[in-house]
Length: 403
Image (cartoon, rainbow, N blue to C red; front, side, top):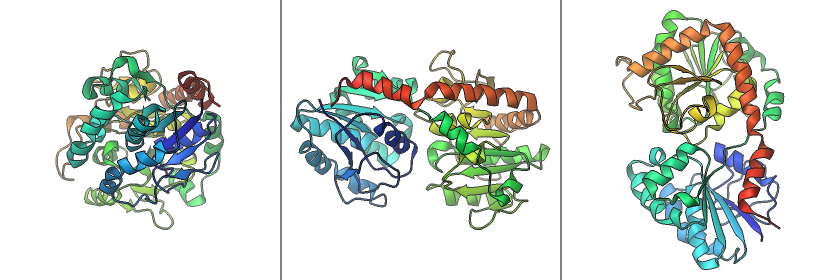
């Protein structure tokens, strides 16, 4: 049986990074992309199924699903297994299998109920409900995603499995030890709260900015650093300025006295996170939060929203799946906070209760160095439980013998 791998693209992103890492550990005879976009290293040269790029209209790429499926069907046949990551690639995989006879194994990387709303939701949710149950096997990267697929998308329980994301903890530790450039080292000489991940709606970063405004009243020396880029970058920089923060937008050398820093894409984010006092994660929904796990591996204590999927499984794995914190909760490996509303309130609007809880807990923890050291050590141990080789072994067990 031949294994083939499929994903939308290898552009920068958590799912793409995970896919590229696993591709080096899973024996396969073809790596295919829906788009001609590959900025991440891969063990073999990827084969694009179209000339589409990251900037191509999402509606056009969704409309092209039947075209992608025909091209994939011509490359696979009975006896083959095609493993796909991400929604469009998953739909292409299932549709192509009806023609080629290959075994379609699909992997959902986020919580579709959170990810797809508005026009995107009207388009994608019916497609997921229709085609996902037709796959031979559907793999979620967390219990929360598995539950969402079963309850809200009609995926049969007997087809669902869970394989968590893997983490190169040793590699992250090596990168974390690399020294910061001198201007950034001066910034991190102050108490710094750092956050990471793409600047998208899922991450709820505006809540962190609003909570940080309250935090600064008690701890004026503290800085907030955003690592990453995304479509909400302009909005978040504008909100930061409206809140009265001296804001570094990301171009040039960072000043030592700004309140909020937008560092943009960093090839090595771990050298930043490792030198922060806290890593704050305000996600509204997740699949399995790579940024949170990698922060733990870098040795920084973490505080996270207890959103529907992911953080609780990492930080408080002994607690029941599906429960959510009603107040700040000290997990075994980090702090869990009540979920945030997702409302984008004006800069001058009063803090929501959850935002105020964030401000208070951040301030408390910044003044508790012993607790921070304990959580940093516990988080590093926890991250070590998610080795890439272990994850690859779970995948090989599900996929069966490959040639």
